[in-house]
Image 1 (cartoon, rainbow, N blue to C red):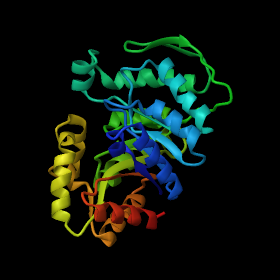
Image 2 (cartoon, rainbow, N blue to C red):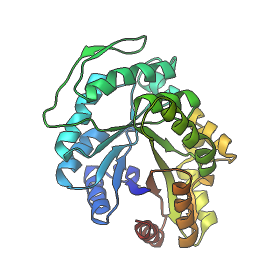
Image 3 (tube, rainbow, N blue to C red):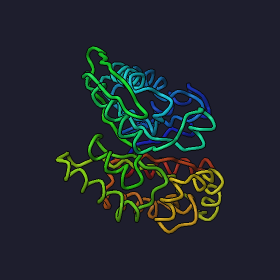
Image 4 (cartoon, rainbow, N blue to C red):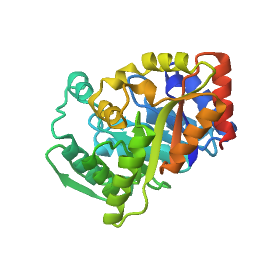
Length: 301
């Protein structure tokens, strides 16, 4: 299992902090560096810059919402990152959430699975420099784009339910999850995705997983802090469904928390259940917790 760093906390501190976080992750030997697309820095624009500044580390989005960006636009942006980074982008995309798409962007969130189906039918050929001809209910495009010297990036879809996992297996290279616990991954996500990929004659898919992580001598305090930091995810329907499937009350219960041995065992369990890529969302509350969390992750490389 490849271990990377989720740079969401750095986003709140600005572009220079993100650049330092990515450079630090690379210098410490981590496999990947992931950025969210929320309501601040544009993840793909930031990764274009970082790609030109770093020589090795994989760069990923976790994730870019599909509704606000036409497939032509997203493909051009992704291939630009590929050009800047020498082909190190993993493009993570997702539906986002109904209140975000409807209340903030003003688009309809009707039939999200159909939207993703049509979006992938357009995006995949565009990323490969091929012509895309899609006349769907939610996506329409007739185009071909070219960014010289680039190849299509690895494409991951934030897939939680059965229909989305099937689409992902058929059209993309794997899934990327957030707030999905190890039991759900082992009993549902990984076997469902693998079975669908096998049925479609596709290679074994990647399973990238993002979870909060903190090495501490005060696990109760760390979980209380996680409950505050990540509270919103317990109220979003898609994540709530995964937490319910896991049998836990909230996001704090899927956070990887404890001393070095406990957290190391939790990370290793992810690999055992079929996770191929782990994006560590560090949330240490003290300098000691920050240092110990990073040291523990480095020891697992």
